[in-house]
Image 1 (tube, rainbow, N blue to C red):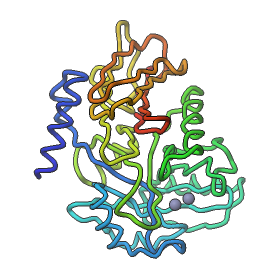
Image 2 (image 1 turned 180 degrees about the vertical axis):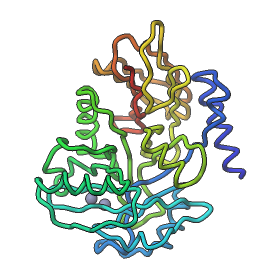
Image 3 (image 1 turned 30 degrees about the vertical axis):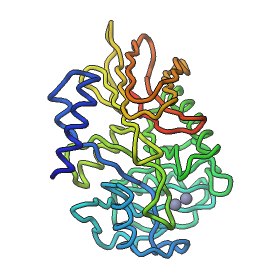
Length: 319
Ligand SMILES: [Zn+2]
Ligand SMILES: [Zn+2]
């Protein structure tokens, strides 16, 4: 309860800065999660689920998903504990690409599909209630051979320690958003070992620490991503709308961005559907900017330190 109160307070302060709406801020908990890690139900990992859970708590997560390769064994029971919510998932692992599938426990496993069969199988999974994440699309070995030309709800823009292939994915993400797609950006460890020390955290604004509430927040894109457990913490709002939301365009409207816990020398980059709008070098600590929505289709931000990504927000969309 202490953790919950602390984060609720921290979030209230952060959002209060940005939008001045106390009711809105008090509605959410800020929870950190990893939507991609492996247990010994994967052939390339020898860490049992119980150890992954205890190590994930050490790493600072409130929720994770065991996304074992083409496996249903991790789904035979709910591994959630009071400290750590475990969301149902598996990694559909094909020669053409890797896709995390969330939200279902019972389905037919298919480990080899060609491009023409993929859409039909994904439609089958969605029919059971699944939602799908495209994993590490620019990975040299296990990237997406089918590009981005199919339906997925989540895009893994960071996978483990940030590298050049992640930066290509972040650039691709901007292109996809500019094309009019609404896709939730996600950052995951993809840990196969050393689960107590991980890169990449999804900070979701959730109404409760339950599987249902966290899933709703993830699908809504009500989240920002950081490479480190230490933040920085991004809050973004447009009126009463948070990250991931679509707001109706109005005169005089602005997206307010407030960031806390910036390391010294961090750059805050604001992107819109017109490209990079601003790149501000900060002296660390707190940073605020108000971005008029004008005729932009979305506004989002990134934080970089010495050429390495530190954080990234999901967009607010303007219709
Ligand atoms: Zn993979
Ligand atoms: Zn994986």
